[in-house]
Amino acid sequence: MDRYLRCSEVENYIEHPPLSEKAIEIANTSFTWEFKAPGETIESTALKEINLSIKPGEFIAVVGNVGSGKSSLINALIGNMKPIRLEDESYVNISGKVAYAN
Image (cartoon, rainbow, N blue to C red; front, side, top):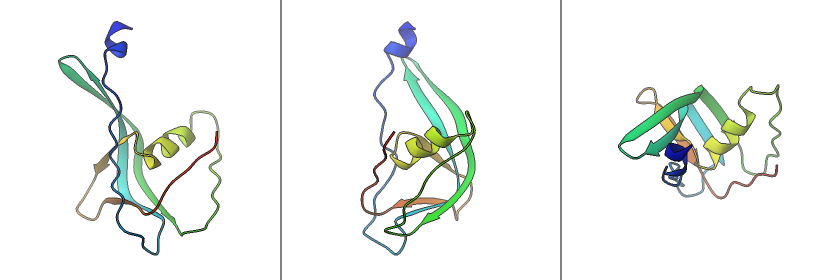
């Protein structure tokens, strides 16, 4: 518990380029939770090889079983998870603002 409480705050890993024809686009990217404790960094991969494309104005619902990665996907989109680009064509582009309700 002590190690967890000493972890640093979450870093924002998402870049926001100028507006484009896609509001959110992720190509062949995995995401990990990264915890920084004094003297060490702990990573845990939660989402693997994600491909997602959302146009501006689209209304999206994320549904699935308990433990299927819904909350992790939302956390990846708002920048709370570290992206791992799997190849040169991997990228995460989020134009504009992203909001979610829980």
